[in-house]
Length: 41
Image (cartoon, rainbow, N blue to C red; front, side, top):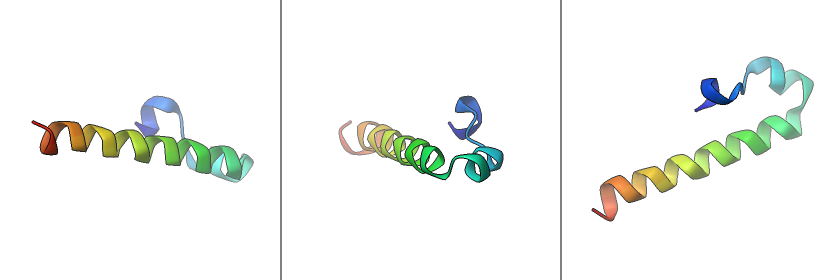
């Protein structure tokens, strides 16, 4: 997901708050995918 959305170490250096927001979003979506695939099926 990071690669697909262009969340890079360069972004982390340039815009720390944007990087944190993007990483939180990716983490939340990954958790939802795991829950949907493993827990609710």
